[in-house]
Each structure stands twice: as structure tokens, then as C-alpha cells.
Amino acid sequence: MQRIKSFEVDHTKLEAGFYISRIDGDIITYDLRFCKPNTGVLLDHETMHTVEHMIATYARNSEIADSVVYFGPMGCQTGFYLLVRDNVKPEKVVDVLRDVLKQTIAHDGEVFGASEIECGNYRTLNLKKAQIACEGYLKVLRGVDEYK
Image (cartoon, rainbow, N blue to C red; front, side, top):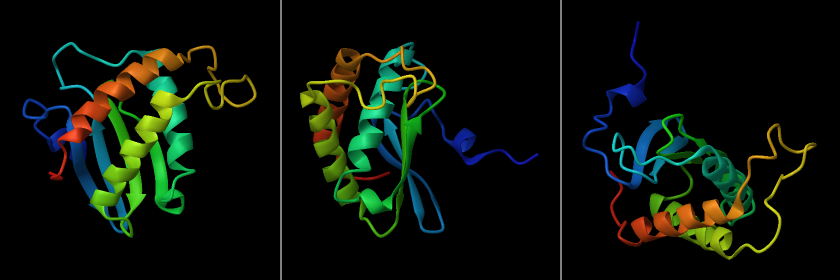
């Protein structure tokens, strides 16, 4: 059986960062690594779930909205995948991501999609935890000018 591409990445060499994970046709998969893998530092469920709701909503309402295909968590709890059409340059994706993180950090209100009608597990949302995680990742992105 063929191994999937993400299992071919040496996770012992990854740091928190922003990576181009793969390119499939006109779709670029970005690895938004909030935590260094295999260190015991993980994103808990409430944090991941809320970051997903907030960033997915803000990204799909950003200037690159029409090119955003997907945003969602990694099962290993160390970050997220952002899939964007290749008509948007990586530099622009980082700029928009910085803006989206700032919007999430500044958000003062209900978490987007925080109802039984909109979400299958709406009780596991925590805006404060998501904001703390986004503040940490925004610091990681401050040094990003290269896309591995």
C-alpha cells in the first residue's frame, strides 16, 4: 500500500511554522504548525475547535475568500491545514493569515457557529483559549518570510 504524503515528512525536524505541505493541481496545502511535533505540547480540543470556527469564518470572508478551499485541524493536535487555490501567492496567504489571526484575537462576541443548529459539538468552544493560541501563532508568523 502506498504511504500518504504527510507520513513522508520527518516530523522530528518540524518546528512551529508555516509550510507548503503539498501542491495538487491548482490547490496548495499549507501546514500551519502551531506546535512543534512530538514534544507533548498540543492544542486541546476546545482550542482547536474554536480556532477552526474563527479562522475558517474570517478566511472565507477575507480578500482571498474565493480561493480558500478548506481550513481544518490536524489530527495530531499540532496545527491546521489551509487549502488555497494557486492563484494566491504564499506571501499573500501569510498576510491574510496574519490579519485573520488579529481579527480572532480582537474578537469580542460569540464564537462563529456556536449553536446546536450550526455545529455538531457546539458546547466545546472556548474563545479565550483560541485567542491565546492565535497570539502564539501570530508570533511564529512574525518571522516567516520563507516557505519550505
